[in-house]
Image (cartoon, rainbow, N blue to C red; front, side, top):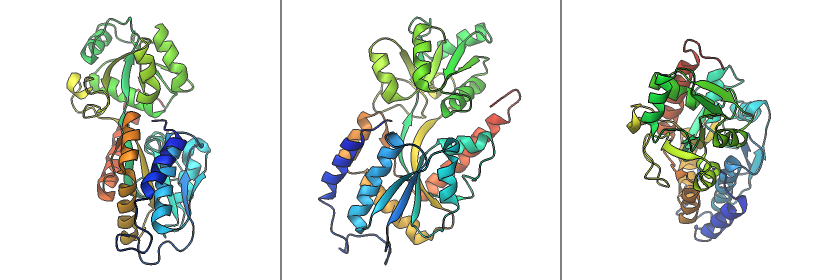
Length: 327
C-alpha cells in the first residue's frame, strides 16, 4: 500500500479544481468550522502509505474549508505516541488521526496508553487491502488446502515468516494457523522486506505480504501467491481465491488506513468530516491510483467503522489469550 506522495497529491490537486469554492451551497462543513488550522496526526514516518493517504485527505479538506490541514508525523513507541496525542486532545475537530489497523492489534497484544474502542471516535476507513499468502516456489502446494494438508502431515515442520513478533502480519498468520487447526513454526524477521528473501530461497516456507511490495517478486517467479486474506477476492487479483473459500471458513483479515478523532467529538462534526473524507477519497484519480496499488477505497460510515474496530479488537484479544500463544 505504499503510494507515491507526489502522484497522489497531484491527483488531489487536479480534482480539487472542480470542487465548489468555500461558502457555496455544496459545502458540508459545520457552521464556523474550521476557524483555524487543523492538525492531522500520522503515527508513522513520512513517505509511506498511511502518510500519503493522510496528505490526500488534508489537501481535500483544505480545498473545501479554506483552512490549513497540517499533517503532523508523530512517531515512537510503535506508533502509540501519535495515537495517545489524539486520544487526549480536545474533541473539537482540530486534532485528527490517520493511522493503520496496527493500532488495534498493538492494543490487543499488550496495554497501550490508549484504548482503541473507548478513546477514539472512528470517522471512516479510507483504504483497505488484503494480504497475500506467499510460498516458496518449489514448495509442493498449489493452494491453501495443500498448505494445510502439508502442515497436518508434518506438525511443526512447516514454517512461516513474519515482519516481527506481534506485527499485523504475524498476528494474521497465527490466526490462520489457529483456525486451520495446524501447528507451524514462526520465524520472525525485522520487517517483511527481510522475510521475502528467506521465503524465496526456501529457508522459510511461506509468509503473508503486502500486494504492492510482493507482486514484483511474484511476477519475477521468486514467490508464489496462492490466496488472499480478505473475505472477498481482490479486484486487482480476481483469480486468487480467499483463505475462507480455500478451507478456512470465516477467515477475513484486511489491512486498513483509517481516520479517527478524539472520543466525544460532536455528532455534527463526525458526520461532516466523514462526508468530506468520503468525497475526497472517491475522486476518480484517487480511486484509480489506489486500485493500481492493490488497495480499495472504502469510505464507510462512522458507525460501521466503530463496529469494525470493536470486532477486530475482540478477535485479536481472543487470539492473544489462546493457550500457548506468545507475543
